[in-house]
Length: 358
Image (cartoon, rainbow, N blue to C red):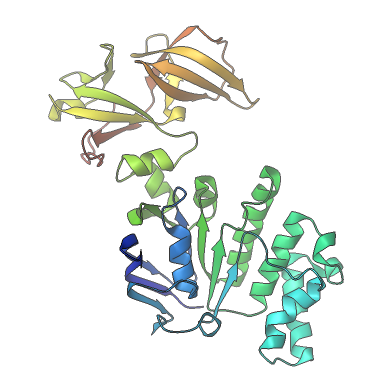
């Protein structure tokens, strides 16, 4: 396994630049996920690492070797696509071994490598089937097996689970994570699904508009977002945001309610954005925040409340059962040190870390 170094990488189509100087270091054996909204440049960046897109500027190195001018087949990488890209006329075994056959490997070596990969992925009973007779999850495992038999320095995954149903995505997330633990391989993985990123990655790279917003472990991004974009993108449901003014007692909302905080005194007079995650707001008869219930969504283990608070939409996740109906009022209080502050103009996090609740 080898690391990947992305240094000052840019991509332009004519005069339009879509990747603006990306710098990322991926350590050997690390599982790094590129995440962001559609059009943010994550798949383009992955394709540049793979050699499927030309690099306008900067360098990509794999295992210490600059690969800018190296053909994809010579980069010692294996890529797994969202559409599987299996040959319909070939069996599972033939699909998995095809790249080795093209590379001139002997039949005994190909059979051994295919058998070993099939054992890892639980594909032994399916080796003689053709793709048309496989489920979506089985096809994805075959695509992964085709990558494993090549024993590459780096695995590249481009939204491999996007075509699967919700239940199967959960299962495949666990399988890919277990595969990484077993092989100790270096993985660069693209997804638009932040739940995938949070549950699978060693580190996450959050992209927006062809630029990096923040790099960190899943919990670093969740607990200490660098800006409002990261705060809104990481976490499901998304963080709630309220315009506030800092005062001596706390943060004053537009309706006059005050959220108590020791941090507010040092920021007195500043107009800020207060961020509170849905699970950090709990029903409290004496709470400083009043909301009008719009929608109640019970799931059994928890209840989602869609609320209107100071004229804007907000979401609350209640772990216990709650008797609430559309149109009713509920008072809420933040829990613990769960307040995030952002500059109202540029969205950058206000980083003083005094205790959040008075």
